[in-house]
Image 1 (tube, helix red, strand yellow):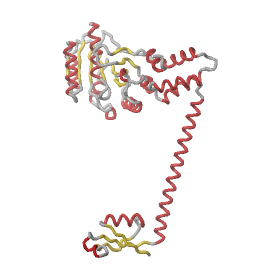
Image 2 (tube, one colour; image 1 turned 180 degrees about the vertical axis):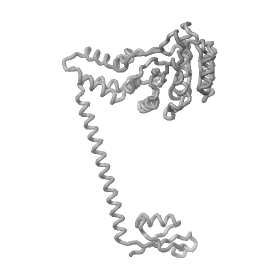
Image 3 (cartoon, one colour; image 1 turned 180 degrees about the horizontal axis):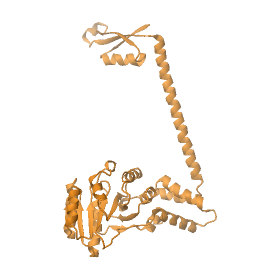
Image 4 (tube, one colour; image 1 turned 135 degrees about the horizontal axis):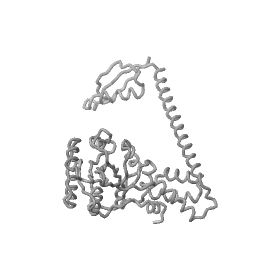
Length: 358
């Protein structure tokens, strides 16, 4: 049995020193307050002294356990490092299988916002299907453009039929421009002068959103109703029973808080003849975009609208989104002007931008 003493200005300080050296197996024999040595010690703050007993082999055992723990951590880190290197090596090997001409297009796609793995996967599949070794630049570009347009898929704007009343919901995260987008589509429908239209908002979280839509409804001379729950929705549908089209603005929410039990999605599920537009910002980073799509996947049928395209460095998110979901893209918005700054997606124009033609 060995005995050691530790001092500190507080009990905590002395105990910290004790545990650091002896570990938690040491036995405290005594704790007392002592004055510091020397003449000036009489005027200084007393120290706390702790006397502890320990077995020498325990101390060695503690140090041995500590060394074993550090060794284990180092081994795990080395294993992890090897795994990362192996994955990186495999990725590089796969990359090297892409012909040089295709690799040039891959870099251009990445520069324009296409996710690295998305661009690599698309072009790797293409190189596995087609022998590019004897094809000229014009042919290669044509094949890549056609391939990318196929990935973007069929463009599906608003589908209208005078035979039935249609309720159109605009959903999506905060700050993407749902209300302005709804107003643009409403204004275009008013100009067509073929439909009787009503507006609904369930965005009761923000007074500004209600005021904004109220301003648009006054300008367009369209009736606006505010709903808070399912009962309000049913009453409004009775009020709007003669309308051909009802456009519904919904509250922007943090996508991580969204689920199918939210009131608005219960309302949506109770409506038969409807269309749902998921409004996304083209400026959203890929990781967030992927998370948004995952959190809205309980809505089985929706179309996608991309806003703020004029603010994007590239149009890569359009291709990224289509790679993540089979839902069709419909419109893109290119500014704040109502109703001008919205258009049906032109996928040939998008692809030309992605490969650097425009």
